[in-house]
Image (cartoon, rainbow, N blue to C red):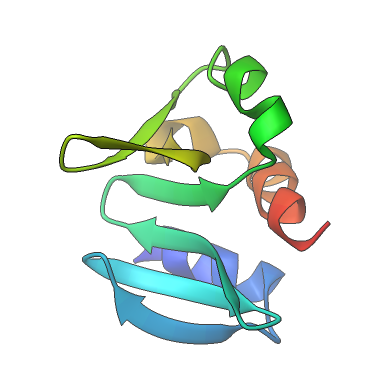
Length: 94
């Protein structure tokens, strides 16, 4: 999976765990980002979450019927440019 390899390159020291149907990256013991077949699940600051939902390819992250308040889903198509992927991954290590 190309996206997975790109995220690995950006988070070389993160621990990888298989979960949520993809691969999650643990940063300082906490899940920070998960790569799945359709994009990323990204931990975000709750105060910024609403404004991030206005960006192209970004949606609420849901687990069943539950909206996950500190997370967003970023479609793979919105991550084609390396600079955009670096920005999203940079959020989780900031």
